[in-house]
Length: 287
Ligand SMILES: Nc1nc(=O)c2c([nH]1)NC[C@@H]1CN(c3ccc(C(=O)N[C@@H](CCC(=O)O)C(=O)O)cc3)C=[N+]21
Image 1 (spheres, rainbow, N blue to C red):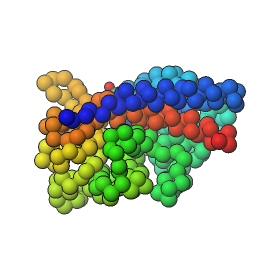
Image 2 (cartoon, rainbow, N blue to C red; image 1 turned 90 degrees about the vertical axis):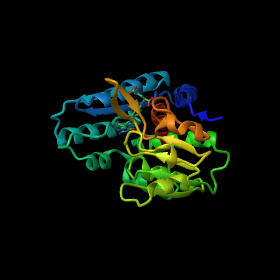
Image 3 (cartoon, rainbow, N blue to C red; image 1 turned 60 degrees about the horizontal axis):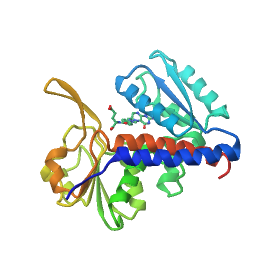
Image 4 (cartoon, protein in one colour; image 1 turned 135 degrees about the vertical axis):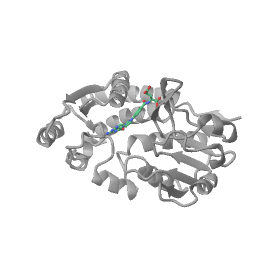
């Protein structure tokens, strides 16, 4: 029987656990851990994400600071806000929603965030720590994927994990985390030859490319565990809906476990952001 990996339920558990820890953190330090989220412009997909995030922040008992900036914000204004948040003792985590409008530099913003407050784990210092196995703040989506995998795979060691996609925010960090868990890791991407047959050899398949239903039934090995990171808006029968990078229904009966979209990686990403905010706050208090 195939297991549907319920990211929503697992995210609920994580947020509850964080909420308990936040209560004791407050008693111990007389401080509420705070998360600042910066949104530039009005991307409709981002607003859904931010709405979910604020709900979860409240559930966990964290303080939330939302900064909504107009599309025409200048680099200088954004830099100044980051400086201010870096200095602010009530802010323990900073997340700048990506992608930014084209006239703003993402790398400059990522570099400007204090590594100690970088709850996305995107700062080069944190990336370096991740690669060398000294990580504290791990990118949220990869962290969520690993938590789900560890629940559903008895022994990661020695398994062949194939990651489809090589982005800095998902593909590369997941590959590093899988390697730390002693998987044999292959990253495939748009220039890869024989992508299907490589995917077919995967015990663990992670799809993170943003192409609706790219992964078909004949791309997966029977009994594989599939993690679908894709969140793609499509129109089907005149209705807008969210689908993953995996053709869920075609693949379902062939695999041993699979994450749905929605309700899989998405909610776990937010739960991990909440967890990272607590982790960042603890570290700032020397724990
Ligand atoms: N600095 C930064 N960090 C991020 O982590 C980041 C970002 N920028 N930019 C955008 C992406 C995307 N992302 C999502 C998180 C949760 C859902 C989520 O909760 N999805 C629900 C569905 C929500 C719906 O109904 O549309 C689900 O999959 O069940 C979606 C997308 C975080 N991102």
